[in-house]
Image (cartoon, rainbow over the protein chains, first blue to last red):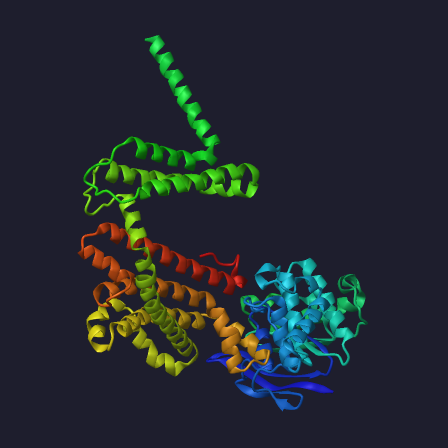
Length: 265
Length: 337
């Protein structure tokens, strides 16, 4: 079943076209990865879906309703600026709980918040303020807050981009665990510029070309989960997926002159 | 000749050893300094330019101080915490009592400074003790009432002005030029107008103080809110926060550090305005007392008033710092100021 539909989206700042004639449908419970170079309009795409910006032309439908403004139905995790520094981790999450479960008392909300924090492995840090936490912990906290919102659609904007490889791997596993454990599964749109990350996480990968941003390729990953990190590098099927993705960008490079950042993949 | 050099060298070595010894007994520096002060006070006779006081207030002070610091020094042998504290404050209080002693010698003992304008410490203490009740209950009470009225009115008005300007474009359009024109005028410059325009000097004074606090509070609240990264508002809108929730859960907490800077600036300028208002128009309060005693040429009382002012303002600023530490606990370690 289709839950999200983008119908011929174009987005421009004045003369600068960021996204052009972009159409996309996402199925319920699908884990979609949007792959693209930095500055290629990936974040803009996510902001449009979240309702933080409106497309110049075209429409976005979520659950058969047009997207016009941000809503807790479409939770987003930003790469940075995620947590409010003036609230403790628990209060940050409790804010989302207040929205998803408004009937709870103040104390119950905090208890629910603590549960979400335990789920991302931050049970002991609930009372801490964001500045007391490492980058990885902060990103876990942001994830917990968005999960607490109970949104059927999760938008993740390079959420692990600023983390060291070790923490990144741990958080990728955590995200997959949480996504697979929930019934019904949440729909996830995950933005990244890292092919390995895309292959590890996605049911489907959308390759986004830049200047202007548009879909230049689409690969369905038919590999069983959980996927091993080693397979992604060495296994035959993943090598062909990787080749297919790289081919999308190479073809584009042949077609037209590309700005410096176009070849970042 | 050779003998002379040897002797000098030996003296120098002894002096150096004494200095090193002094560093070793840092815990006893303050009692030693006070001891010297007491010795000089007892041995030297008073200069007759300074009028005699009824009681020997200076002696009481130094003896009490000696008892206090001796207790600390002895206690330091038993409590490591005391020792640490005393080692830390030792140098500072040595300097304090040294300065007090020098001033005492220059006034009371040798009469080096004009006695009219530079009363001895004993005379200042006498003025403080004799007028204490009047200073605290009448003068400080009256000043506190005026300051509290003006300060809270100004701070609250400034806070809401800042919020309006920070969140509402229409409010910003109309209010910003106003704050830019009225704001930089020193509040005390309004005194000639305010004194005739207001029914009582109290209400006029309170208005001036309010004005002094309002400007920095409004500007810093407004700029604090304007400088909140838009990402925070976006995050809160994806969390489903309404406009009002965004103001109270995002804008104001995020602007708090800036608001406190405004309140600090406002506090300082409210003190200035309070003193000036009391010296120029309001007919009571601690500022008025200082000015009145100056006209009477009783400078011991002027100093006594200044000491009360210093202590009070110090306590108020400390209070504000404490409040900030509680409210901005989330900032601890991020920003230091």
